[in-house]
Length: 333
Image 1 (tube, rainbow, N blue to C red):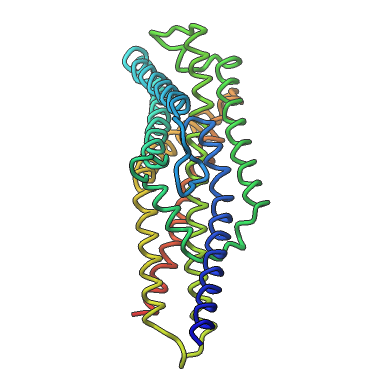
Image 2 (image 1 turned 120 degrees about the vertical axis):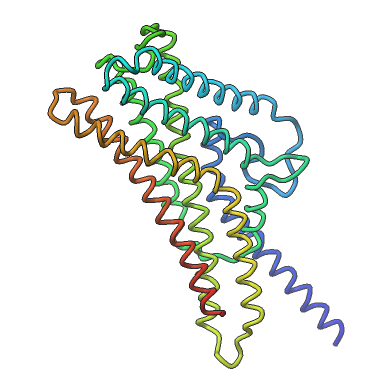
């Protein structure tokens, strides 16, 4: 009897380990492509798959690359703010234009700095993101809505958004002669214009990729609570173990708290700066709707729609997780 019991324990241990590896592989396949794109954009360095042990060797080149991107974003932000004091108060339209770009540069710079602080995995101690991913590996989640094909489509849409935004910035500079580098004291020097165009691409990635990571993590969290709901619905009322389910719900809430620590600084920056950007773009869209500057109108319309859509996505996925948490909490109480 003891041998049979030991054999069953070994079998259960092997099944749990296999399930854990499968969950780890599924979640890694969802997060890894986004982190690789963020690594290319200078928003992430180090171990993208979040393995149990950090990869040996140094990440000096990757860290230097990320530091260079962040430094370039700081430079273009300082240039935009400097132009406000030189040319920003001569005409009201210059004020709005320079304020729009200053806020956008500030937001992208802040987002990039936050990503470099909370995402990479260190050898000395795990980052906030690595703690969250490690917690996700141990929880069962309903991931039917997050297929590999759908995630690839989302990444393709994000790349198209970055490409279109970069084209709009280049068209404004080359055809309409509208750029931060064309104001004083930069006076349209080619080096300054190229600097803004190059780091405009990096800012576009900083604008798009973190919100995609946030939505994927929220979808995984929602799937965890949906999996708990299935356990509640499939068990009989006589055989249901409220204590174990309540404990499992508490562990899921702890994972949500880890996600809050990861994304709360990013959400603070985005929500506090997206709102004035939406207002400025809407004002510029109404003011220039009767003019013949089609390129500027299309660009401002795209920015306004992109900013509004990003805020809507953040609210939609955040509210969905909050509803899952509160609904299960009411049931258990």
